[in-house]
Length: 272
Image 1: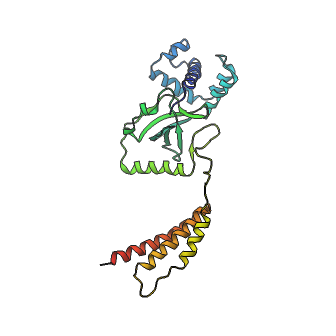
Image 2: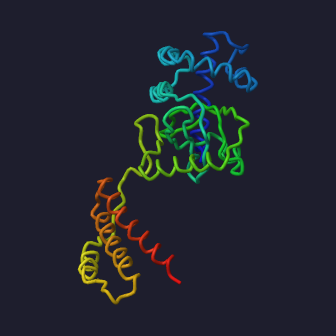
Image 3: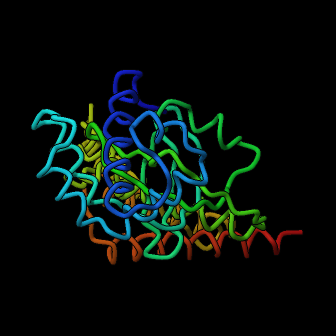
């Protein structure tokens, strides 16, 4: 979950050049050349970085002046950084390909974020998750990265918040809303899965069989609810495999099944 070595080298080359330019314009810290800037303490770099995002219009000036004679392609990459997202995020989990960042103060948007030179798992151990950080997300090479600086909060999360964050991630994943690019707002798993087989014939056959299921006066009490469970399950299955996105219809079919299950539970509970 990090950039390639070549991508990381390019990021720092562009980033430090931009930051040095910003520092020259705003006179924030002492740095006479790029090498001086690279050797600055993290504390000083944070000052320059914060100034950049407070004066992001200077990115346009940098691109126009092009002090390091970068290629058009590289300048366009720098220009993309005007789409930065700065704020507090909750790192909910670390996956093989990216870390899950959930926006803390807005609409709980979920981002797929990569490290630069270092795996995020080496910076944020799994046992410390979830954790709250202040960060700046940037588009780079068609991906989302953080800008290399994370401010960690010493906050403990209870089981309730952990469960809520997990649900936020799972909901975004299920609805294909995990953002993996700030450029074109791509989402992960956008393509619909290709079904290898349709089950219409089988479910139609089961439905015909289920219609014949009847409970009589002399039959055990459990017959009626279990037959209802079978019929409701088939009806719900048919609705799902039809590709229906009618949430109301799905909830209605689910409600019929739940009522049948509750009736079965009641009768089972009454048994001696």
